[in-house]
Image 1 (cartoon, rainbow, N blue to C red):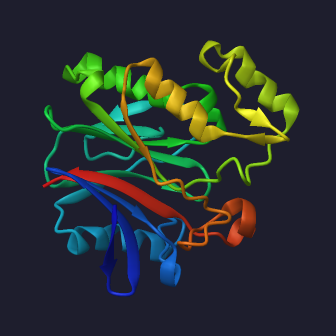
Image 2: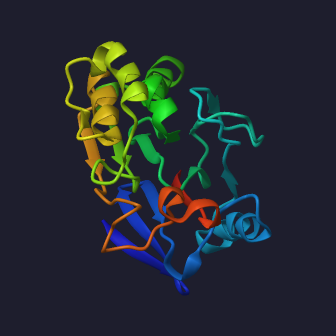
Image 3: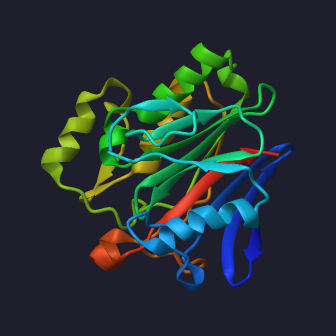
Length: 234
């Protein structure tokens, strides 16, 4: 894991041979909120900053719909691609970004997973789709969990948390403690359930990280910007 600086902006960088993964930070208020002109401009800037032909993303709706990249902006929360020099990514400001890849098949995906997406196991469903539609071997898939509101800060109501105990793979997991929900453990469990063994996490909390500056909706409210986590093959 390293840092890539683009002017005054900062991206957390992970490279696995031909796979390139990046998680933007909020240093110098880098913002990818598509509801602002600044956010739209920065998405477009990524093409020049990283020498890309295009950048794919979704209109995120906190669901479990998964799409193959086709240059369109769909309503969904996971996007899969095999197109070289085109990045796919997701926007977050506390929810969990997960970047997934099969280096041998050169298939990669970006997933946005808030509590609703985590409850519906969108990460597991994305890996299954990679297996069924692209022939990926789940044991050869790698996944990186990006910055999010971690269990240290993610206060979550008991009534809603009870819904997680109704999901079979979460039933015996310690994912709710002292009024806080551990989304990372849920996502790790999903990945393990489909035999993904190469799981990494940046272990950075958007709310309280001392190492990096991040946008956090829970901390800052409606003024919070958005990070963009993306993956591509050159």
